[in-house]
Amino acid sequence: MKIYDRKTDSYEEIEQFGAGKLDFLYNNPVGRIFLGIAVSPFVSNIYASKNAKKSSVKKIPGFIAENKIDMSDYIDKDYQSFNDFFIRELKPGKRPVDMDKDALIAPCDSKLLVYEIDDKTNMYIKGRGYTVSEILGEERDAGIFKKGYALVFRLTVDDYHRYSYPDRGCIISRRMIKGKLHTVSPVSKNHKIYVENTRQVNMLKTENFGTIAYIEVGAMLVGRIVDNGKDVFDKGQEKGYFEPGGSTIVILVNNVKIDKDILEQSESGIETKVRLGERIGRAL
Image (cartoon, rainbow, N blue to C red):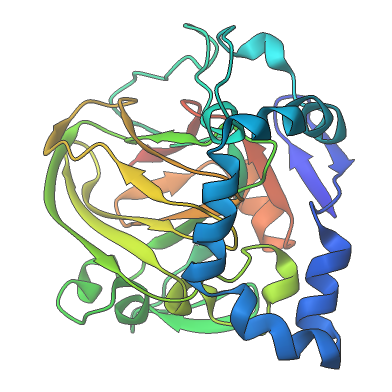
């Protein structure tokens, strides 16, 4: 899979973690028999409980090597489990936050695709049609995002799995929508994962971008979505983290002009590698 790294202005090929197993589950007739079990929260809970055991630390060295994780970015510590390693914390200064009030920042290390929302609140994400109300789980606030953008930040297993607020503001509402736990990788393209998957929907009132929908989407083998529960927040302040597994954050926003390089790559269907705190757009 090709992605664009705006830091180096170059493209790189990345491999999907567990690609063979995922292809079997989603594209093989026999595998699809087991798919319903694999995407259940029960399986993810079992996986999480194994990774919480002290013995799971033996997985860490191989995981670092296989996924080419640069551990110089992270605080040195003796991890108590694989879960503990997975939610590792960055050293101070490793992800500087663009504090320009007009800068919309990436909330996490991830691969970003941007989609336009039309005047009827419809959008196409990875070739599948969605409405804003489907993603939010209700009609009430859908109209806010007419002619805006859906920003899809896909976290892979090698990414830093803590995420932050994109602007200063306060929580209007938050609610958890229970569902399945499909993988967020491209192999699940035949499923409406941003509607079917478990997700936490947060409505934020921000100082510089108006009302934003900030949605944490659970994924296959994600143990938990852990939210810090704060009602008032600063730009770049940690909001929460995902326990083991790749996952996604979807932001719906209107009052913003997305950076040109990201839009150009998204129009070609290519994800842009972004890092927590860097500017991805500007307030209108």
